[in-house]
Length: 219
Ligand SMILES: Nc1ncnc2c1ncn2[C@@H]1O[C@H](COP(=O)(O)OP(=O)(O)O)[C@@H](O)[C@H]1O
Ligand SMILES: Nc1ncnc2c1ncn2[C@H]1C[C@H](O)[C@@H](COP(=O)(O)O)O1
Image (tube, rainbow, N blue to C red; front, side, top):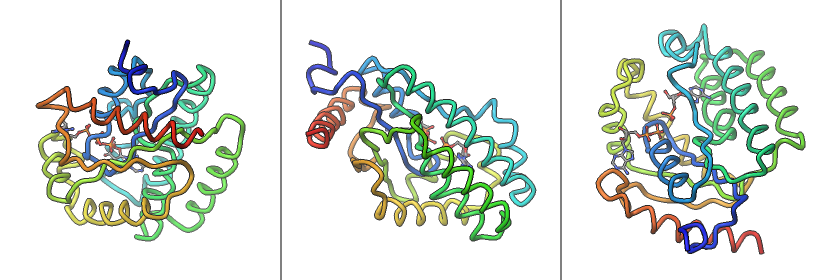
């Protein structure tokens, strides 16, 4: 019996991993996909043509970047739909609008006109048959100190040059956002409770919770 069968996780499940920058989404995405023999839908950083520019000048590039991410995520959403599920997705589309676009608008680094254009496009795209909600959103949470030390350890230059206040603002917004999120079932996992780097076997405790949650919510 494989791990997917052991924990009774349906083969067509779509699980999305949410959480602030550096919390461990990509690591969790790979670990879950390997354990379940699922496909991954990854957020590609290296090939993003706007990300470096955006970090150097938020005001100039925030709208371009949001449109780029929206297009990328929508293409991924279509791919997941066409395969009929069986995916682990690195970051949800809900975070683009609920965290990033909103934060840049409210902090004055995206204009009101751009924000409204972005939101209306988002709403038009999300309200289509390509957009079934995920079966489960795994929310990774951790202390601000743990998360910032992971950002440092990973060492992406553009993130090192970003003021700590940006990550602090984002960390606070994530807590508020998840407390009112209701588009699909949520499983909250604290990063202090597992360690996929030192102990690969700790994925089993996550799988057990995932199986339980998905089966409860599909009933
Ligand atoms: N469970 C873990 N234990 C220890 N370090 C981790 C763990 N998960 C991720 N990391 C490390 O934290 C950093 C950020 O992880 P990553 O998966 O890239 O985060 P995200 O995709 O959320 O930005 C990486 O250096 C990664 O090796
Ligand atoms: N929608 C977004 N707006 C601005 N920046 C974003 C958005 N989505 C991701 N990002 C940034 C944050 C990180 O620097 C990289 C990758 O995110 P990660 O959480 O490390 O996977 O892209």
